[in-house]
Image 1 (cartoon, protein in one colour):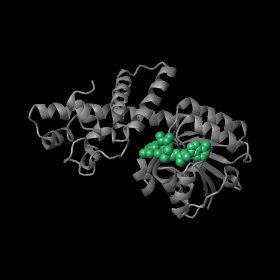
Image 2: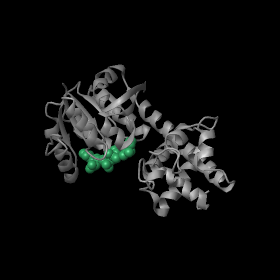
Image 3: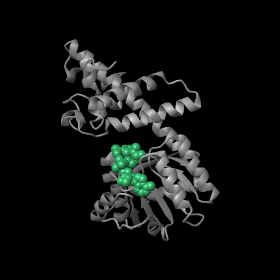
Image 4: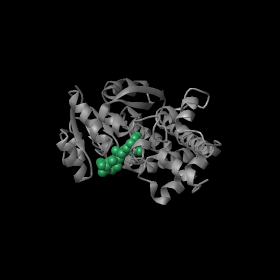
Length: 295
Ligand code: NAD
C-alpha cells in the first residue's frame, strides 16, 4: 500500500485514481475545479480541499493535467511542499521540453521522477488497461511500476527524462497520418465502386494493414466497435489528435527533424477542427476527405 496524492481529476485522472483506490492504495485527490473534485468524490476518491492537504504524507505524487504549463506550475508547488525522495509521476501528454524541465526541477529536490504519458483513452483509464510509456531513471521506473500496473496493462521504460513523451508523440504522429491514409483509401474505394467490407477484408490482411483499419476502421460495418458506428462520438477527439500532432511538430522543429507528412496531417486536422469537428472522433476526418473539404 502506497500513500498517493493524485493531482488532476478530469476525464482521465478520475478513473485512474479510482483504480488506485480500488487496489487498496491510500489516495488523496485534488483538482482546481470544484466540479471535478465533487465528481471524483462521488466516484469514491478521498478528496482534499487544497493541494498542500493532498500532499500530506504522500510517498508518491501523480499528475494528470492538460498541458506543459500546468505541469510545470503544479510541480513547482508540489516540489516546494514534499520531502526529498518523494516519487513524482506525470501522466499528462505534454511537450518534451517541459517534461525535461520538470525532471530537472525534481532532480534539484532529490525526488525521483517519471514522465509517463498514456495510450488507451478514457475507456482504458476506466478499465485499468492503459499503456504507459515512461521516461526517467531506472529507480523512478521501478518505484512507479506497481502503481502503473494497477492503472494499466503495460508499462514500457523508453529511456531517460522525456523519452516517454517522445514515444507518445511519435506513436500518435503515426496514428494521425495513418488514419488520413486509411480515410483516403476508403473514400477512393467508394468512388471506384468497392464495398467497405471488400476493402477491409483485403487491406486488413495485406500490406496496407494497420491499427487504423483493423481496430478503428473509419467507416461503419467492418469493425463494429469503432466510432464510425456511433456517429463518430469519441473515442479520441480531433482536438486531442491536433494537440498531439502540434507537439510532434514543435519537437521536430527543435530537434531539426524532417516530418513532412506529420506537418501536413497537423494542418489537415487543424482545418477539420476549425470547421466545428474538434469534439468529434478524429476518424471522422474521412467525411472531409470524401467531401473534398480539406486536402
Ligand atoms: P481534462 O481536461 O478532463 O482534465 C484535466 C484536469 O486538470 C481538469 O479537471 C483541470 O481542472 C485540472 N487541472 C488543471 N490544472 C490544475 C492544477 N494546477 N492543479 C490541479 N488540477 C488542475 O483532461 P483529460 O482528458 O483528463 O486529459 C489529461 C491529460 O491526458 C492531457 O494531457 C491529455 O492530452 C492526456 N490524454 C487524454 C486522453 C483522453 O482520451 N482524454 C488520452 C490520452 C492522454
